[in-house]
Length: 253
Length: 165
Image (cartoon, rainbow over all chains, first blue to last red; front, side):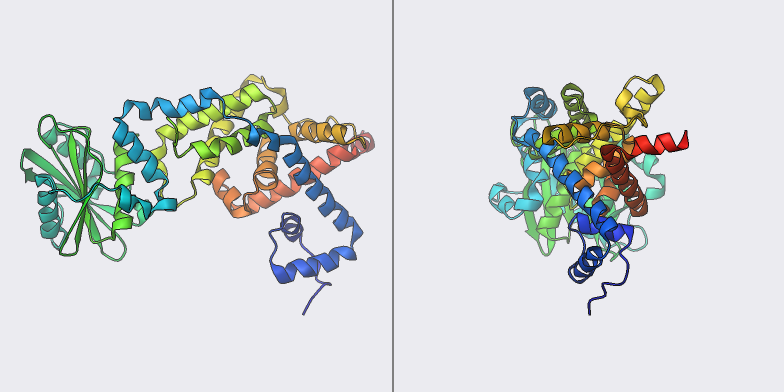
């Protein structure tokens, strides 16, 4: 039933003016405004303001983007290898065209040795209840400093909280070319994923993201900044891609 | 390079910046500062959230820092709220000019809300997240900003000032 006698609040009037008020109440407010010319005049004025703002500033939308602004974007990615810069762009818009990434991923190739080691380390330690990590997230700074020193690279613990995963901690592991690091994350459901970092060997070139699945364990791995990265978990491939892109960005920006 | 994920959002960032500052050079400087900051902070952007809203939030932070800096220098007159009335006219082009002038007389925090809602058509919720304030604050700034614009454009402020003198 329409209640055109219930006065419209100031908030409702703004929502009405902005077309943000829900169906039934919008009709009520409309009826109420018909009986309250002073309020109707205000709403009219606000709508006229919105129209005026568009008339004033919309022409900017049709102008070509000044070169200085396009250059501002080109500056940073230009320092990255071309293929990697392209990966950033692809990943950042991945939400919209997620499935298209299936075609973009490089075709299956023999997994790098470090990816295999990452998968094994994940299976062993992610299942561990008592001692999943050597150093807990409580001592995150120490953990990062310690593992950075052992690998001789500046490591970071990417923030995956946006995906519901909190850092549990990390450990030092033997890799095939020396020491390797494993950071472990866990979500509210207790699902774990690990980020494995190792030295891929001299002359290793940055690669695109590669994907392997073995017995329900998903591995996304890539080489960048003289480090081999492998993200391992039970999360589905699309989510793993999202998280890998966050890890990639954490190490590059 | 082309196809940068920020690129499709630049026209709307430019529109918002121009409406905020009403000066093309300053507006594009603000956009450039915003893009550069966004590139540095991209690791803090969480996928699954709206990139456009995030870029507006970055611009808001850059803008607020500039307003703060200029307020301490008293350099940019339009950033300071003034009670000087804007002449009302019936002519369309003049009305546009009035609106543009009246906008300059809003407090920066009111102007931001009026523009994010009225021009950029962000929801109240998105606006609250962009500005990092509670939604109640958005509503009260919107209400005061729009009423002030209305008063400025109808010349009410002038008579109001006369009354209290």
